[in-house]
Image 1 (cartoon, each protein chain N blue to C red):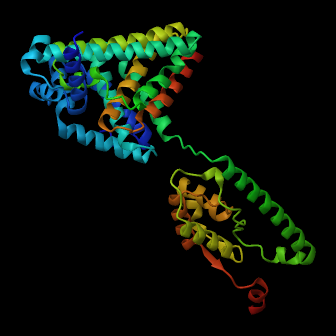
Image 2: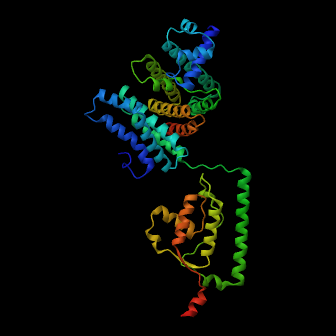
Image 3: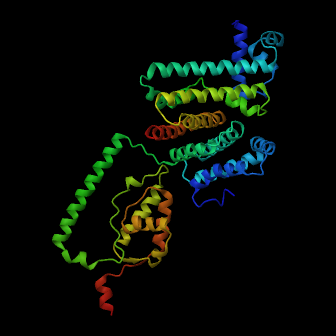
Length: 250
Length: 187
């Protein structure tokens, strides 16, 4: 029932409170039966573990920092609120608990990153150096070979990977080899004409990764996003034949 | 209070929290406390009486500690509720923390007719009332609602912490409490 309640894990976690509310409000539920069943929820190890495992899985899908702990807390809050409704006749207990649970899920799923001051200064300095370097290169290129830019217009213009995007920092850091492979692929693609026609049909989440990482060249540190990006690159068709040579063939 | 009585009480408190109330026998308590069953029953008529005393003493100690913190460090009424979870986090993370008696007791004694269950429910209600009082002082409209939410967060986090020491559950409960308190103050 919980599994099919919503498409989003966050909503599925909260649905537990609605289901308990509906169940306790059902007209054919007489008090002694509810008591027995609530006690069953409390004491049956198997049921408790099944429900907590499910909650932990959903919590992990929602991106919780500690899925099992969150599952345990949510389970406790739901049972305590249900008992409050039954024994203290508090009709608002489950909806109040749901709001508290929502705040708890938000607290656990909010991505946080703490960068040491010295590290932040280093990043800022590197970024500044890259900007200056890129500016100088651009000036040099346009002054010495202005036509080259116009001739190498790719179907997909992959921007230079400007280092690893700090905005996309995730608590789980990426594998350096994987990041390097991704950056190398993007660098290579800059020298060719690349296209992935199926991009229009990609799911929104993949489309965002495609535009951000493959097209714009902003490399995320999220390992899962990197895997998706590498897969999309594999599916992208690139032609590395120099434009002039390709034209002369015809 | 006699030294021996206090020793039995301290030993029982530690054993109940670390091994469970039902799993801790009187034999175990007297062995660890270095006394005899006869002495234990001289001070506490039954094991149930000992459990009730343990619950009352530990809850009183926690509430005294919390009230001291709130009254000495928070000048404005609105600050007290904001800082409540700071102190709770400090207490949970302290090496002396071994759990909350009434949370463990209510889980181990689910029968409503049981005096231990009744006392643990009373203590849970009293703790919620304390939060409600702080919410009222901070001019929050739905004091009962916020008190219930914060007590659920508190009890849920302590329950998780009792299962896995250093779980960090209280850190997220504190963040969630801040979201709820800020929302309640704005309304």
